[in-house]
Image (cartoon, rainbow, N blue to C red; front, side, top):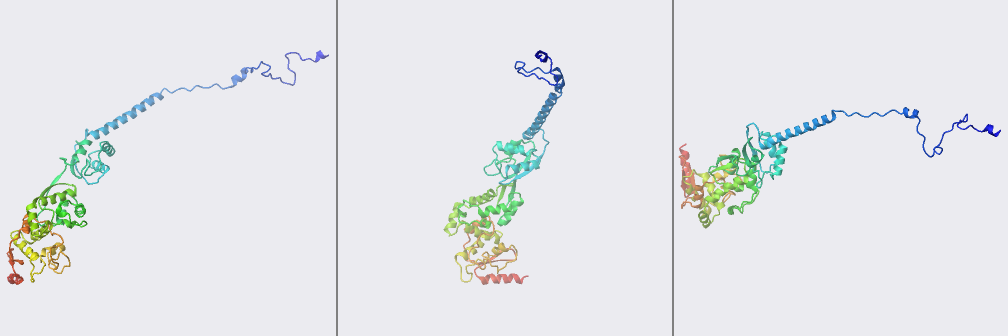
Amino acid sequence: MAQEHERAPGRRTQGRRHTPSHLETGGKRAAPSPRSESARPPRRKKRKSPFGPVLYVIFVIGISALLAAGSWVAAGDLLALNKAPHTATITLEEGDTVAQVADLLEENGLIEYKWLFRLFASFTGVDDVGEESKLTAGTYELDTDMDYNALINAMGRGSANRSQTQVTITEGMTLDQIFQTLEDAGVASVESLQEVAANHEFKYSFLQDLPTGDYRRLEGFLFPDTYQFYMGGDPLQVINRMILRLDELFTEEMRQDAEESGYTVGEIINIASMIEKETDGSDQALISSVIHNRLENPTSESGSTLGIDATILYVTGGTEVDVNLDSPYNTRVYPGLPPTAICSPGIDAIRAAIYPEDTNYYYYALGDDGTHSFFRTLSGQQEFIASQERYH
């Protein structure tokens, strides 16, 4: 009976599924059935576009061409190649930066790329506009034939492209008139000239004791002459050159003679400025004698005042003399010399101030004929003035 209940080998027991394990197969997993293999979708291989490498090459070539074209254009600007002919005048001022110079060059059509000019200036050691820089303050005539290096050299000290102008300063001009003349000629601004005149410490011996702060301290020391000045130049050089001219003409012999008479160079310039304003030049030594007599040998009648109306007009700037003016320049009231000279005297007036005529004159008056008459006493002068009035 037991044999009747034994399972036939290879047959499944009804109602129960037998799953072979890896143990029954000797430790190996059974191979997947053909049905499970076919159920998985096959992978598709990506096809490469034949245009990818071509577009990349075209892009690289395009960028290279653009860079090459840009480099060529930039090189053309740097080397001044194929530029349209053009000339411009520009003015550099002390302290201008390289960037400001580049702006000027671009605005005036001399360069196209400011950034490239600044880069070139940096590599070539160009600093801001100044005394020690390759770029010097001034007015320059430049053109598009100049490459960057030529432009920089053309804006330097001693450049043949630096514009010059001729300026004539006449005898009797005041400091204000001189500065305005220089500004009108494009040499330097009134403001910059005044600043230098007020505050610079000049090395000339006759200027050593002058206090700083007021530009009028140099009144009389800028010698009247005809000069060639650089336009837009350094105001210190402009002023220094005019003082140097005075220093050259005021000889050592003249200085010694002035010193022996008890006067400094500054006092002589002060006296000479009054002589310059009081006469047309024909009687300068006689006018000088009146001033010297009043300064050195005042009388009870003349007192120690000079009574020079030109010193009052220097302050008022008018044509009528305000005898009641409360100012140290009113030499009818205040004794001695005025605080400063009242104009720039010429060499003849300076010589007259050092070498006056030897007279006893203390007064003079201008006649209707345009000449001066000289008197020893106040009464003599007043009689002359009254006689002139009777003929009007």
